[in-house]
Image 1 (tube, rainbow, N blue to C red):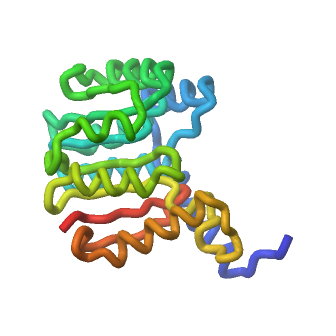
Image 2 (cartoon, rainbow, N blue to C red):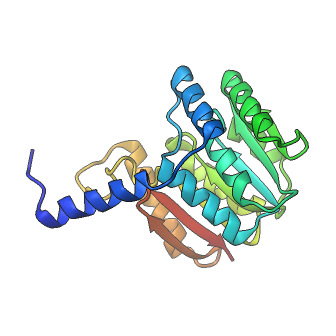
Amino acid sequence: MKALSPQQTGKHASWAFAEARPIEDEIVLMARDRSAELGITPVSEGTASLLTFLAAATRPQTMVELGSGAGVSGLALMRGAPEGAVLTTLDPDAEAQRAAREVFGAEGYPSSTTRLIAGRGRTVLPKLSANAYDLVFVDADPLLLEYHVTESARLLRSGGMLVLHDALDHDRVPRPAVRDASTVMLRDVGNELRDNTKVWSTSTMVPTGTGLLLATKV
């Protein structure tokens, strides 16, 4: 393995420092424990913290999440969103959704504000109302990302935010020689969000966790 340069080593140390900065409470740790039990990889500590920040900054009233997991990312979004915000979260894994429901209940969110739907994006997203959501968070199969982004554009209101998790594909996206299908898909989607200014007014890549790609609908 090629040795890291001092600059690269410094960047990794900064990334690790930022990831370790959040202090998580018992409910989040419970959700992470349930994730481990179910074999689910949740968003990182830094990513969860950033999701809470983004929700606090943009104050979404309605949110969609693709990939409930055991509730780590959904809880992060709800904690930042204003009182009365509603999260619609999708996942085909019924056991994972049960775990997420327990986490939301432990936090005190009523079922009217956390709508858990057992199903895949291709089945459920077309049934959701167009131009009705302020934020969409996607943590799902990267090979279906193009479809999920197209549906997200339909669901989001003008000015709504799209957040894509693992946008760097575990550091493979920046390496041109890597041509895995998921990596190519993420590169193509990233270019689409940057270049299609008729649909997306602005976008940016954040290296937190395994990468978040953010875009705002025109």
